[in-house]
Length: 217
Image (tube, rainbow, N blue to C red):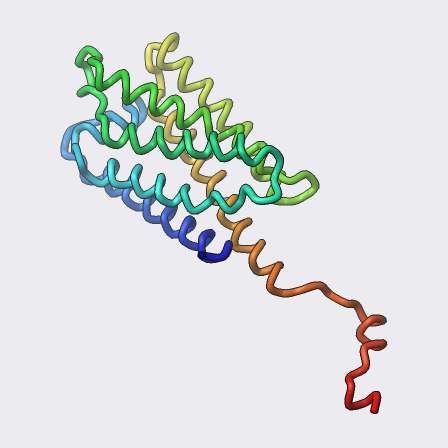
């Protein structure tokens, strides 16, 4: 069974790889697509099975290595269900494409849309429940959760009421916030294992009172 450090490092590596693939997917698109007004899914469907689709699968796999972070947290079953919803939503959105930009939405496009919605709305509450009070990581997690919720609201507003104004920017910032949340959780896993293996500090007084058998004789 892998320890927390290994799982944390695998998650960090997967997040970094997914980010790299997402950038490549944007650069390699041949069509004249506007990242400010078009979503990541619009870019992905223009290169079906390309770097962005692979990035979503890699990010889901990286997230699966974060389940050990649930140990000792509040409501681990709830967090586990939320994390599973995030992973499942990502995988379903990667497998089922949206429609080409400008075309009416079909059944697959609706499945893709709501799978993405489930994923992006499941992760913030999971991050909030994982945040430990009084720690720097907890402050970061709560800040990223609040930023993610604000950006999710902006994305929804743009999609339904704002005539898709800057929807691409809002969605990409949302993805960045949620990837940051995953990164903080992964770093916490790495540090948790390091702290556990270091052992407790006895302090100078206790160390002075510790006598080896050879000296006692």
